[in-house]
Image 1 (cartoon, helix red, strand yellow):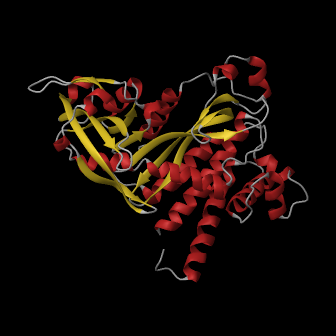
Image 2 (cartoon, helix red, strand yellow; image 1 turned 60 degrees about the horizontal axis):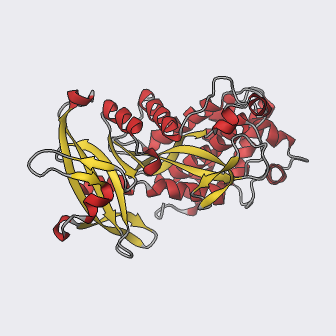
Length: 380
């Protein structure tokens, strides 16, 4: 937008905000609640640092937070319809065939035991075990920009198996315990069913497991998924390889490493040393892949230039895919971290005050919509 005048920029803001406020009206039933939802978006995009109900109400000129709270209330309006609206709105501008779907999670620090899904658990947001909720998200990343297109609150067994806690937080009867990889698979399948255009999936080591790999192979999608150093890998052929990812990486010769950028960061290119081992070539029909031809299972290793620490990735791609393409797909993963930071610091992603399942998903979906609007404006 460097070439846009102030007037053009303000016009884009006004036009896009009016467009999405009009599109969500049908999801909130009564006209007064729809108007409150529009004001809710105004508050998320406003200058207030805290996006609490009182702060949003004050910005909207309301005498109290009740109208704002009604948007997140206990009625069973379909938050998933709002999620799908966000996805379709974002993809209308950002979609390209070689996009990357990035799956990751973030923590929502909480006090007490009443907020849906809260318990003491590890979150990378705090870098420790603490009292929090965990949300699993999918972001769409392309050279046009990035935006969240899916989300789900992780419901630990301490909630899923407790009828009293479920009732108190209005957890729907059809919501059951699901591991984070299972949530990721459901998001991938939902994106495929909706016809989302993407070529790759990238994720950290929580999601580098067999059920995610199998789902992507059968969908004909490439992937670069983080794995632990203890993950075993093997190959066959003229130069067989066997051992853990760490053992294999430590045994690589200096000639195996190539210095490449994983994309531009705030301080310029994010340079690492990379090594890539093609472990096996498989025909598509052998793994139920709908995309014909030969596909390659591989191990990608990233080495830090500052401390030589290693990170490991299991990969799956059409045979002959250049290393630069794999590195580029993995490098797209940073975008969801940027999205979490922006959504939390600027849009109030973690300022949700409701304790219910529905309230969490409505609040997060509205933040996703605000973020998608920013991505659309930035691209235009």
